[in-house]
Length: 344
Image (cartoon, rainbow, N blue to C red):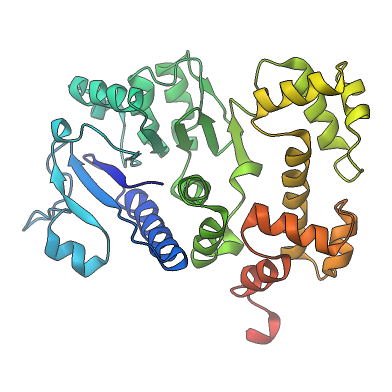
């Protein structure tokens, strides 16, 4: 459960790259609190790293001001200094308007703080050119990262030891997540809400923030710890599952494909991937089912059969476990905001 978020207020930042994730987190907190009937706190600190982080020609705005926080409906607790934040669950680094290299000048204290917070367990979410910060802190050395398309060459020149993934809008390297754009950041936040709260809450927030425009994090992300783990034989098993996801799972056949015994496969698969082959396959099937529910008029029973489930009841149980709602509920919710010819 997430209870504390730190926003880095940087000069020339894109405010929307902080506001969108925060609004989604607040929606998640509110929904979870109602569903679970328990109080859930979410404290948000804004760390003003460069002055003025937010300003106009006439007046400076303190984002932590309680009066402002009440008006905009976001849970700010105050503007603080780096030294005051000794523990936090999530750090959000915004995208910047201009050359991010200028931000790094004299940023030694900020980089030290970022390293210390990450060491103590904080998750880092960097958006667009904000990815320069964790890279400069050495947190992305030999790790996957992405950034805004316009800055790809400059980033690679500045950080040749980082595994820049030009074809992915999202990356994960342990507890460091990079999003190439603000829209990708919204997809990433849905994923994080699923981790911080649960699948049902993540799906609810997804529907509130235009589900037809959202793309699954799992489909788009480049993850260092998914197919890129060091167990080559488990990777063979994963590859076979991706090619034969509609077929009934035969653990003996899968073990043969991976040149392992069934017992070895089960143990090594769990260690490398974090779940059993059966659980991995169920999630894979649900991804395909999700697309069919959204984009076709196939009956749920037909989708269940196409995606390799024994029957619609089995499909419904698995889908609800993975997505937090039933297949029929998902279809209604995801299509609620789509336009039709009759609406025009």
